[in-house]
Structures are given as C-alpha cells and as structure tokens.
Image (cartoon, rainbow, N blue to C red):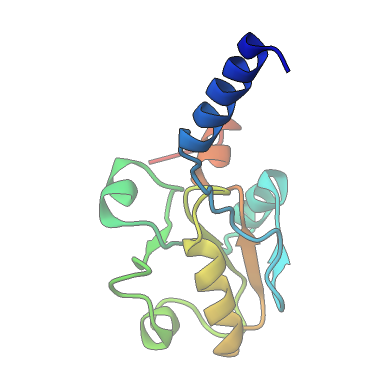
Length: 138
C-alpha cells in the first residue's frame, strides 16, 4: 500500500471511529390489543367524538393540541384511575403524543389495554401529523 493511501485510510478510519452516533428511538408500529390508526382514521374518530387523550408533557399540550383532548401527562398523572375518571373502559379512546420519536402514546396505549380498556386506538403519527394535515387545533 502506498504511504498516501495508508494515510488516507488511517484518517478515514479515525474520523469514522470518532464520529458520534446517536440512537434514535422510534415508537412501535403497533401495540398488542389496540388498533393503530393513521391521520385519516384519527380524524374519523374525532368526527365520531371519540375521546382523545394527549399524554405529552404540559408545555407541549399548552402549545397546541387536538380540540377537546383530555390531557393526562404520562410521566406525572397517567394511571388507571386518572384515565377511568375521564374515559369509560368500553368507550373509544385515541392516544397521541409527538409522533414516531415519542414513546408516550405507545406506553399509554399498552397500559390502557392492560387495564381492560377495550376500544383503544394508537395514533402513532400524533399531533405533528394531525396539524400538518390541516386538521383543527387549539
């Protein structure tokens, strides 16, 4: 190997090894026991007056939300009692957060199914997709 080629290879390898890699967590495509819905189906459920539960942090909720959404912040207030005080176990409920990189709605969906809620919908695309589609926001 020529000296310049070795140097180039060494520099490339050093750069590759020193470049930080960031793991990007992505929410699951589905949650067992729930129906995953896209934006069109979420809108249809909204029009049918299904309960929408926003599990984002307080500041996200205050910055904008789906009209009429029930806010139960996942990490502070979300539990079986807080959900049951807002939604009947046989009522259609849609959980959402901030899209694919947000794990809150999948976690809330999984918990609700485990607690016996029977008409659970997981809106994985969340508020960003809702807003981008031109749906109403408050």
